[in-house]
Length: 144
Image (cartoon, one colour):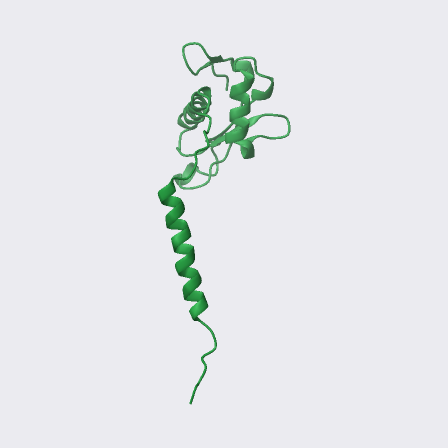
């Protein structure tokens, strides 16, 4: 089942040649035709060799969805939420587009901060109190 290009944003378009579709039987409810129709969709996106997205986006996709990437560098998306093959196909394409849009903006760099003086004194005070509680536990001496 051939589909057109995937328009992620106005500037980013994934060509149809980078997308591959497989159909399989979906699990779950479906009535009498559940065992005869291949309504689940498995979308393969060869993002490692795609020229439509930048290297930074590829790295963020790999970091976010590393478990969904196979050895050939293909991102696998499995869609079987709906009973219709076309709706599952649209769902898989929309999920891929959403993932790429999410990875377009680089994450903010973490700037290390120092603990405040108040938090340091609270921490030390708590440690002293806990230490005194533990020190008070011990063998009871019977002075009779």
